[in-house]
Length: 103
Image 1: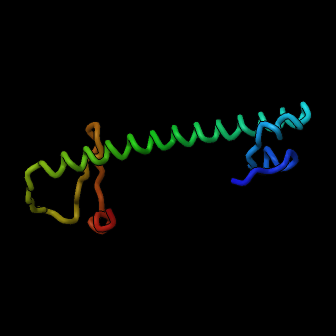
Image 2 (image 1 turned 120 degrees about the vertical axis):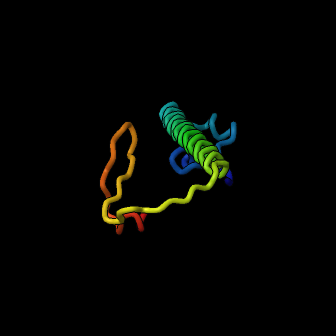
Image 3 (image 1 turned 90 degrees about the vertical axis):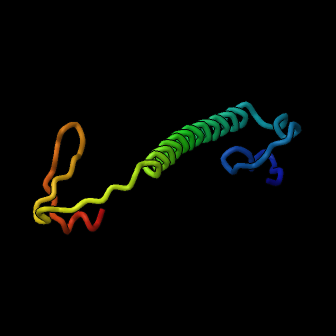
């Protein structure tokens, strides 16, 4: 970004030179510091969110890799009107066959 004068610094996102900083009042320097702190916090939060997303992506890639290594299993339905889906921890839900088309 281009360098801005002392009045354009801080909230406007301008870059200050050392000579510009020397011209600022105490209140202006405080405002520049607060703006910088806010920007640093925003960047830290964004980095944390990116790290979480990257970890989830790695977990998903690992799960896909595990699925690709499993042997293919074919099957048939005895009764296509009653389909039970295992949702984990020993719970099953009866699902309409039409709903499975959208999964």
